[in-house]
Image (cartoon, rainbow, N blue to C red; front, side, top):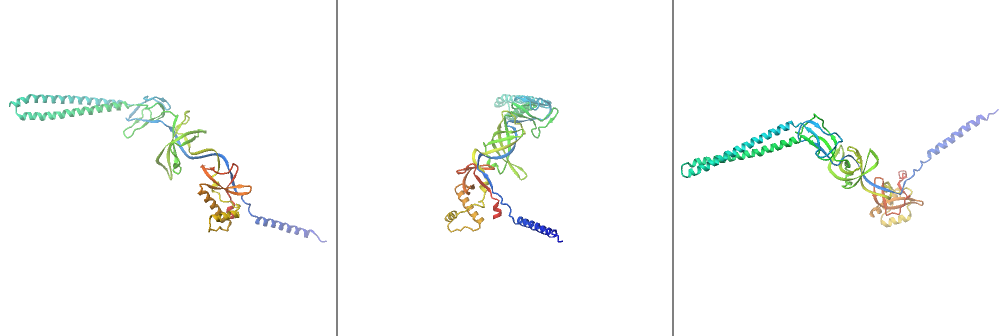
Amino acid sequence: MFNHRHIVLPIVIIAGLTALSALLLAAWRREDPVPPVILTEVERGPIRDVVPALGRIRAANQVEVGTEVGGRVLRVAVETEQEVQANDLLAVIDPEPFENALTTARARLLTARSGQAEARARLRAAQAELARLRPLAENGTRSESTLEDLEFEIEALSAARDRAEAGIVLAESEVSQAEANLARTEIRAPIDGFVLERRIEPGQTVNAAMNTPVLFVIAANLRDVLIEARVAEADVGRVREGMAVRFTVDAYPDEVFQAHADAIRRNPIEDGRFVSYAVMINAFDPSQRLLPGMTASVEFVAAESHDVLRARRETLLAWMPVDFRITDAMIEDWLARQPGRTLPEEPHLLRAAFHGSYAGRALRDGRRTVYLLTPDGWEVRQVRVGLEDQEYFEILDSDLQPGDRLLVDDPRRSQVD
């Protein structure tokens, strides 16, 4: 008897393979999905054009206290963070060598004064002898040569007196220097404030022969602080003295401190291929929470405005979208504006011609071109650019409204072109 299963089964298998082949062929022929255009909305918001930088905080009025004399530190009278008044004793250097030097200088002064008195006495004696012998020489009882010898002796004695007087000046100077050095063994505070740093200990030897060692750093207060911010060479041209500054510190991340820019240092700071310049920033912190050494994240405010009509900067760089409808009227207007020229037939070249025409017209009027998506399709809008920051630009002299959608990019261009 004939078995139908031997016929049906091969037919089903063939039909299944045919259907699968058809599906694979359709999938192979199917085009990739068309990517959507990238849009952004016109909105209201702030524009902040800032120059970023980093800096270190230090007290605005701080003094490094050193010593002009060397020796062994006998005593340190203050601790770090201690409040001091001007002329308070900070430390004492062993005064014994300087006391001995003062004693020696005073002895030399006494010797110089004795020499001066002796020189004056000898000069007066010679002058008196000359006065006594002059009448005798006139009546012939003394020779003229005796008078001449005495006159030469008086000149020599006058020079000796002058040398003795100069020796006194020199000895007095040595005494003054020795007294000053002795006084400098007591290190005193130059200003009112507090001890920010103490760099010496009792028994330590300091040497002021080659340079002045820093023993203490005294800060007047921390209400006035100074930030030395490093600004990249590409941005330093946008910074000017007196510019408003905002900064934050890691210790108070939610608080923004206000300041203003001061002097711009001309000496470059080179770190490999990176070049920056130091800009000094003055800030006032009545609560004295900003401590020396803190890192400040700084923003120099080049321009700022609030609640303005704005759009993303990328819209100013957008090219005419693929589905922009170029009408016959637009073509006639283009040809009328540029007589003797012809438009290309290729769609992407035609769009490029119109894009360049719109952009050129806008730039001549001091404007820029954007593409607006409306229910009826794409339209060209020309806007005047106001303030700019890293993300947005301010829209001026335009009928654009918040919520209007502007073209950022059309990915289809790469597929069609």
